[in-house]
Amino acid sequence: MYELTVRSRFSAAHSLCGYPGDCARLHGHTWTLEVKVVGEKLDQMGMLVDFKEIKKQLSLVIDQLDHRLLNEIPGFGKDGLNPTAENLSYYIYQTLKQPIAAMKEGIRLKEISVWESPDAYATYREDV
Ligand SMILES: Nc1nc2c(c(=O)[nH]1)N=C([C@H](O)[C@H](O)COP(=O)(O)OP(=O)(O)OP(=O)(O)O)CN2
Ligand SMILES: [Zn+2]
Image 1 (cartoon, rainbow, N blue to C red):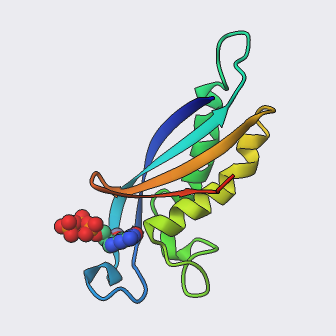
Image 2 (image 1 turned 90 degrees about the horizontal axis):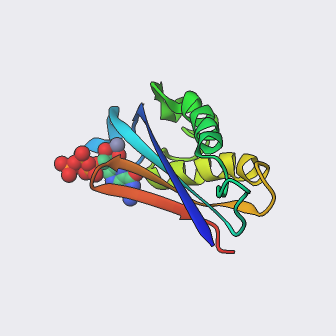
């Protein structure tokens, strides 16, 4: 089994609904986003899949999040998910699962991790 990892960053603001402290107030982070892709078979060049293809998908998601208020993104906010690192990793996993599986037969998205700071991050994966 091979595992590829690609990281990127974006800046966005959020406030955590119901949080008993200052994170309930509007504040921002430079978020780090990490995607892990797994599969068994390499192509004739020795690649599972080109890093560039993963980066392309990652940048499509980041375009929707960068320099925004996460509470205003459809799926988050008053009637949706609280924009925690956990919920962001879930949301990004759901967004990228199909496009990554469609890149090449036999590969799949393993997990998404989202860092709020260099010291704290959340990971979402599906049990398979
Ligand atoms: N399980 C989670 N806990 C917290 C989340 C989260 O998404 N999932 N988010 C927050 C806040 O967004 C907060 O901004 C992060 O605070 P914290 O990790 O404390 O980071 P700081 O940079 O503010 O640093 P300090 O260590 O508190 O100085 C909180 N919890
Ligand atoms: Zn925060």
